[in-house]
Length: 37
Image (cartoon, rainbow, N blue to C red):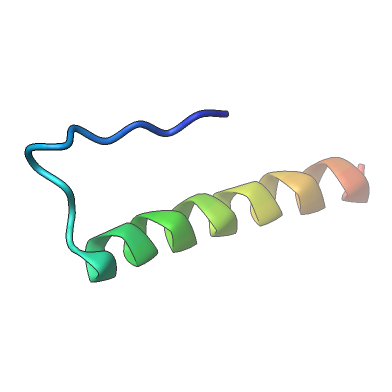
């Protein structure tokens, strides 16, 4: 998975962390759902 951000409009660090955390939480939820099956 490759994430590329436009060089002219880089998101603020807090926004990047928030986005990464939401992705991580989604990944953990899906992983837990698959394992619990």
